[in-house]
Length: 132
Length: 115
Image (cartoon, rainbow over all chains, first blue to last red; front, top):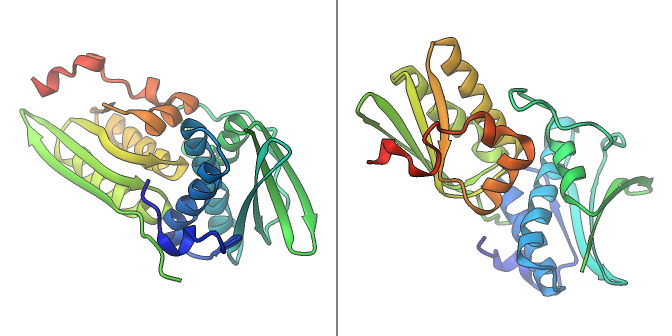
């Protein structure tokens, strides 16, 4: 995946998004930061997918946008996706292959080492963790 | 901010009574309508549609939705839609969701439609 220069400056700690056309930039941003933190290439791809699913969820199910931030801490790559949506549940099964909808959060739960949701002053925070 | 817009290209050709749709680029929410309209046009144009994913770099649940929608359209019309040549992250999400198996081409890797 190509990097977008503005999204990949080390000075940029978080990236807001509010339109579907920004999803590619959001993926480039988290990929760049995760690679820099030492996450393996295959798991960088999984992170990009998880973040894309969550940001898509923001755009489809809330009135506004959100933001993503990524950092490494204690041997883990941590990525927050923050929006104004209601807290989501991640316990659902993967829908049947022929089902039209409902895969996004099930995919996130499947591919991340850990997914947690909490509410804080900024909104609803979905925190993804990958072991480094 | 200036975003790097994901670009999806869908090129359809009709070969020996089947539509072959070759997807290139990234398939996310921004490309959903383009994907769905290309697939539905292909389904309307031939009883068998083969979607070639060799040059697709990214696919998420929005793209899966388009593929499964077109699959149901094809079945309703008495036809079929198959996926071929998925690699890397695209093959991975098709595997995780079971959609790769659902839409597997009967000849699988060899792809007789290419011969």
